[in-house]
Amino acid sequence: MTNDKNNGKKEDPDFDLFGIGGLFKGIEKLVDLAGKLEEKGGIAKEGEFNLDHIKKGMKGVYGFTINTATGGSPKVETFGNIKKTPEGPKVDEEREPITDVFDEKNEIVVIAEMPGTEEDDIVIDLKEDILEISAVSKSRSYRKELLLPVKLNKADLRHKFTNGILEIRIKK
Image (cartoon, rainbow, N blue to C red):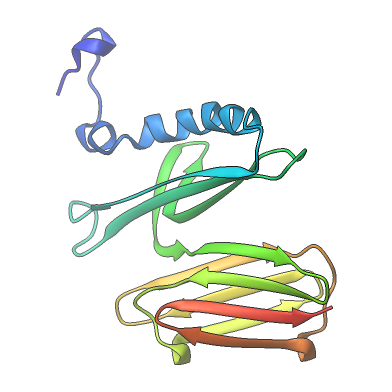
């Protein structure tokens, strides 16, 4: 497939169709834009598409959020199963869940979205300031490693899972 806007150069139609290449290139521009936000706010973008041509039943999921705090620099958080590599985008069967980390007065709170899983599918591991969350179900697989703002004790961790949302609370 030729693309006139690229002076007749041939492109991978699936790569161009889903805008994956442009998405990665555009992230830097969005980070700059988020840095200019004067008030606390954020930007989010996500999408899902069919990758049956790679593996039957496989879906590509990619998204990111950009959050800014008053006087702080923008923080980009990605999720999904499409990763940027030096060779270009790579699609994994394992997805990275959407997560938020809140540093509250007496505890750290982590929220992770893992639809399509059950509580029995989830494994949580805490080693000081590294929290690893994973889940494997019949239809989906998730994994995320988070660097927490402080070192914590695994004995102080409690969690609940409701309708695909995992909430982890760890006392400081």
